[in-house]
Length: 367
Image 1: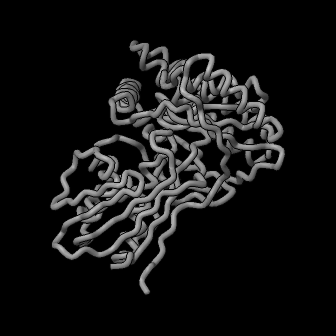
Image 2 (image 1 turned 180 degrees about the vertical axis):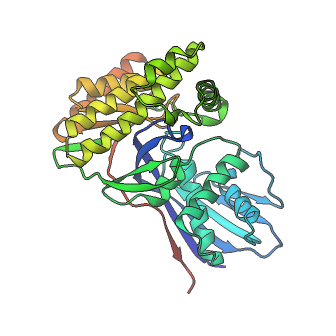
Image 3 (image 1 turned 90 degrees about the vertical axis):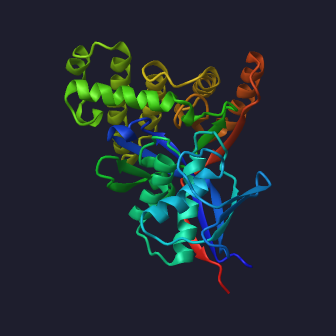
């Protein structure tokens, strides 16, 4: 039987705005130029779901779908489950996954898979879901099926981003607008895979979210989004938990940096953008405590190599570093970084470049 529908959805690079999403704050991602692809075919046996991975060379056959499974196939099966829970009769289905979004790199390979699955099934079943509904289904797969308490950014970035633009997303209202992000030829956006994969499901992410929610409750606000930079000193003085002080300081100042970055992009002030990226990294390192030595070294080498700014992107504890680098300095930076990693005994990093790309699409493959 031939494939009947194809969903294609990219990973994302969050330019700035880390751990603000579940605090009702602001984020500014772009879509990556690497994608997950899900080919969907109607199955023949009841509600059986078959999922095949091109990368792993393996498949699973699922007679039933139960929340709580964090295996590789859960990101696909979770979308089928979420659609069924929403009242959409997704019966037997065969799904084939292929992806070149790096796993564990903080580039949201999970959301790319979820969104590609949602797009393929929407096309196959003729559901005509809106972009907002597609994002909700994909997020439900991660939050409710896999049990990972991520915010709303990743799935919306994967689905809603436009080429040569960043997506300013208000994570409280889920309103979004496109912000121009077309780099001039003299600048390049670099990605550094630090070869230290991050893991959100190991509890670090959940503990930080819990600390933020506890601090918001202690401060009498619905979310940390409601505290301004001007109000920050007084708010911090009211907290007795030093960990909560650091977490609040990061979230409040990071929200301000996102909005400042938007203003800088709209003014084509790339120097200001770079300064904000670096300030974000310092805050993640010192106040949110989510960086690791491989990540910090990559940022330090980037800045020493002439980058306008550099920061870790993604949930933390490893993953990918971005750097806004003069194009003429990319090769020298790559060599310097390899030497620095070797001197510390770290696995060799992988350096690539990217640009702001378009969000996901669905295609019919029926003859």
